[in-house]
Image (cartoon, rainbow over all chains, first blue to last red; front, top):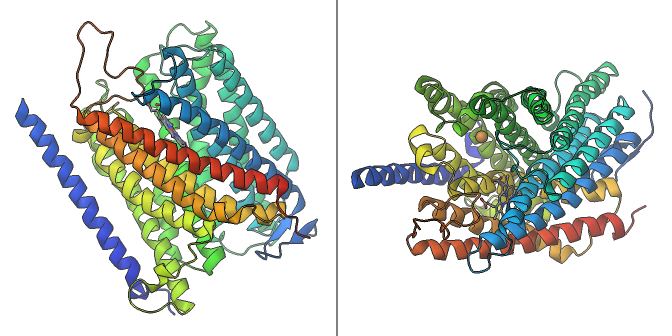
Amino acid sequence: MSDEHNGFHAPGTFVLAIIFLVTFILLWLGHAKWLTDIWEMY
Amino acid sequence: MSFEKRTCEISGLEIEKNSESMIKLNMATAIIFFAIGGAAGLLVLLTRWPAIHLLPVEWYYRWLTAHGLLALLVWIIFFEVALVHFGSVTLLKSRLAVPILSKITYGLMLGGTLLVVVMVLGGQADVLFTSYVPLQAHPLYYLGIILFAVGSLIAFIHFFINAVVAKKEGEYKRTLPMVSFGIMAASIIGIMSIAHGAAIYIPTFLWSLGIIETIDPSAYRLVWWGLGHTSQQINVCMMVACWYGIAAFLFKAKPASEKLCRSAFVLYILFINVASEHHLLVDPVFSTWHKIVNTSYVMHLAVLASMIHAFAVPASIEMGLRKQGYNNGLFEWLKKAPWGNPAFSATFISIVLFGFLGGTTGVIFGTEQFSIIRHNTWAITGHFHGTVVAGTTIAFMGMAYFLIPVFFKRDLIMPGVAKLQPFVYGTGITILSITMMAAGTFGVPRRHWDYNFSDAPFGYQFDSTVDIFMGLVGIGGLIAVVGGAMFVFVTLGSIFKGNKRA
Ligand code: HEM
Ligand SMILES: [Cu+2]
């Protein structure tokens, strides 16, 4: 196996990574929403 | 070079005599302090649990100081000193270059620890582990920290001495093996971080003696976090090195691109110190430019490094298991992975929890706009129990399960308990971390004996959901304490009473 070009030797991890990134973005956006909600209270 | 060594029959590693005894000593000491630090955590937990509110106020702060120091500093760094020896001697098939240095390290660190513990529990240092001025402790407290720091500094320097000697004696060719490389990155960061420690603790020590008149609180915080945050990156690096190590030992797994992973370690070295600014985002004296450059830009380069590792290690494990034939579908490798081996399960749990709990929240809370509403709430405490406990501590637990049979030549006792332990501890910490963050979201402060301000002239009533979260923190914490105790029984039990191997 060559060192390069072997990303898809680990498709399971690839899927896990996508799940992670989507969660991450949702949490981040959730925080932003919550922050603006607080701003609007004042 | 010839020197006294043996070959370990479980791992095939060559174990050199002098380093062996130091690794054993440091590991056992780490675990003993983990036990005491955990007990301190339990006392603090039971005090923050409104239904119990165990300790009186002074003792809450005393035990909280002790918990922060014993868990974050003493357990972690003694274990790291063991890893420094492992990475610079065992993995390089070399010898301990200057055995006396290891002994000095151990003596200074143990002496410093004892001094600090006596001062804190004697009521002479109610300053929490950050000891922000103008809070002042007894001079011997600062001296204890300085001794501990000098001891660990010597250990980090010793890494390089060992590595150079190994290279000279031809034990490795061009570059260090991956795991040693990670421990080397940690050692570099360790030296940087202790330089900040010296720059802040020596003046503070002199101030406590009355030799220096005042210390500026903002300057203190800036330099202190050069130590406090940077040292967290020692922990991250060591944790990642353990991930690669366990993946390699159990599955002969290799990252798809070692070059990429090595450069990720370099990113840590280059950028982590600036990220320490996230502790100062609420301090008025630093300029906005300074804060934004550090936490909105540079920080992400360090985060990038963590993401590279956190994807590379599972990918290498997946590739290793697929080679063993677990090739069906996306996740057969994961289902058939050796979940009954606590070295593996702890490692995997550490990767997942560090990413989801510690990593995501670290990036979010480290953004300037979010920091302002999260600062000094329990959300922060929830965050770092996701990094340094769910991440580093659980990774070290996995490493301990691997190293104890190798170095003590004894089998693990109570294998059934060991098998469950990472899951119990991981579950407890997950609940603790998430519910602490939830309570913090409602504004519950960290480091607070009476968050309802019941004696204050103007009371404050939190939203009633907070009560539920406070109770859940208690329950999660108790589960974690059980998991922590299981670890201590299995490891210390194995060290002293495990079945001897030839
Ligand atoms: C059984 C496991 C543990 C439990 C139940 C636990 C619980 C707690 C609690 C309740 C607090 C108090 C927060 C406050 O009142 O503001 C705390 C603080 C803290 N814990 Fe833990 N903890 C555990 C393990 C650990 C470990 C293993 C580490 C380090 C590796 C750690 C590091 C810290 C630090 C640094 C603080 C902050 C102290 C401060 O704010 O001065 N904990 N923990
Ligand atoms: Cu930090």
